[in-house]
Length: 252
Figure 1 (tube, helix red, strand yellow):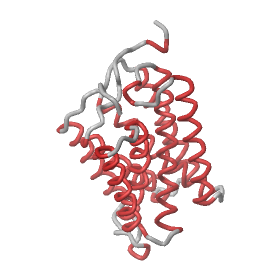
Figure 2 (figure 1 turned 45 degrees about the vertical axis):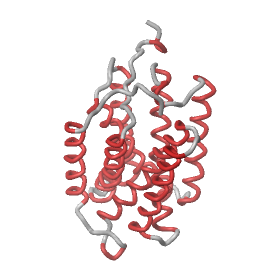
Figure 3 (figure 1 turned 60 degrees about the vertical axis):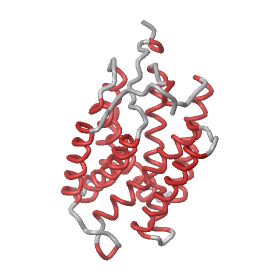
Figure 4 (figure 1 turned 45 degrees about the horizontal axis):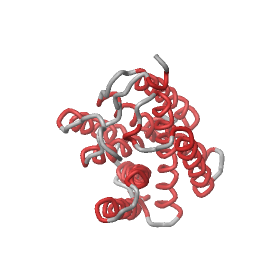
């Protein structure tokens, strides 16, 4: 069977309130988990990126090869993108010295280029249109860039602007509330609003994660990164088990 039509079944979850709740938890875990490996274990950003990028490649390969929607597999890939995105953004911003603004600009350009190529190739970037391996490849590439962009954007908001982690999180939460209002009370494209919300949940999770594990002197709660990551992982597993997880059938 042709690679592009190997399955007509969607393998991404329906976009519900539960989806967004688990997504924010996953992005927060990505921050604490990524920092645990690169900082607490002192492995550095490059090694951390290599580790999590390898996990992402394996996980997304299994996801694409799957014949139907598997909630745990899907969210495992999402967590892999958030951890890899955390370490990659930190590597670009700090190790390479590009800085938050430079890193954010580069990653935004890559994200927009991926979305543009996806639309030009397949005619839609809606999650309801993900019915082929090619669409899945674009979907996960877009998510990978959005997660990395969100890390850089969250760090820029918290550090460069001087808002700190708590107020930075409030800014992104407010932006998400505006997107939600536009979804219900405006005629803006739901696909556009989906991707806007998807991008914004990452810096929200990044700032919340930093707030949990950064030192008190830096405005954080000084929680152990290992403990915070373990608690978040348990909560995510509980949510996947208890909350409805159905394959996407409608529009984004």
